[in-house]
Image (cartoon, rainbow, N blue to C red):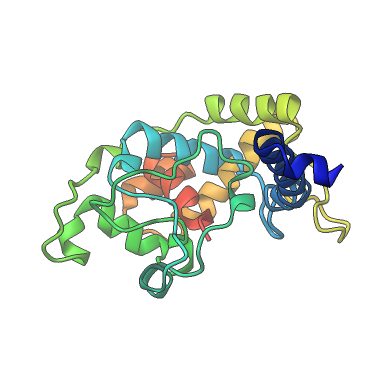
Length: 227
């Protein structure tokens, strides 16, 4: 057979192409499937974090900030471990971005605190002299849409089997509780209260104490989850 192929270059080329393609599929697909699975420690977003993510998208933060650290030393030295595909498994849509007017934020939760974000969003130049980022004072008065965030969480749970109300680590504990509407909103407000306790703005504190969640609180919850 091989002698016959050697005498016919066209068929030999087709045979080599099929052989290499088949071998490539055998090698690539299993590893690709493995890499696309959730990275250890990756959890679905809570309702409050989803609300903050929606604020992040609404105010076009992804127009100036990427969430994709490339495997180059210059990037890992500045932003931390390069991004893994399995870390985006619960992101819909992805917020990789294509422009960096500001720094990458994929691991911002590892090196920025709640009070830093509070000051930065209200007056960027107060913490980053020379910053060209605009201030976002409306986030301190606008109320986050927890209802839409809960609907989104419920939808991805049913449609994409996102593991809410499940024990992901096998430790006997539910990692991210969703439950029914009332319990989910109550949990979101508890998380908001914990964040507001670390903030200085009294109007924000009062709003959360009265059962309302300003957008800044939801946004900080989301940014703090990026690790």
